[in-house]
Length: 204
Image (cartoon, rainbow, N blue to C red):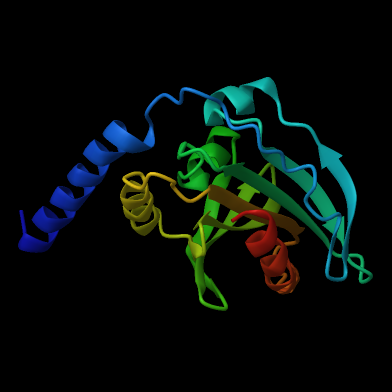
């Protein structure tokens, strides 16, 4: 094993141990915060639909604070937004989203890092039954936002030692895209930027 591989293995091992001890501990009380107050208009984007979380989603993520909405702008572009938030210290929502998407039968066409201002979000192009969907996702802990799973886990591990840990959120945006189209990136970029003030205000 090379030195680089050994160092990475040690880091991942330490992260796993800390996660088990602190991040995924059983919570004595479920979070009571709600996301229903989240703005129905984000810049030029207006909410056109909202979906309640399923019992399965609530059981897996151990929070009822799951918001799924559809927003549309005056150009007719649609973006689906999923927010999962927990201020109490539960970090189960902070996992790579391709795991969930593949479990839903979607296949990865492309994966890369996508910068949104200073946020290094994850960009996923997924396909299912010939239909393609473009996703941006990242994690938020207080003011810190990043799509890096390892960096986010280390950040969350450090936060777990605080008497008052920062709230944690998963932000996932998506839009349907025809093959060869680049319009999806423009829509998600525009929505991501417009979303920032609401994220910072509503999800501390």
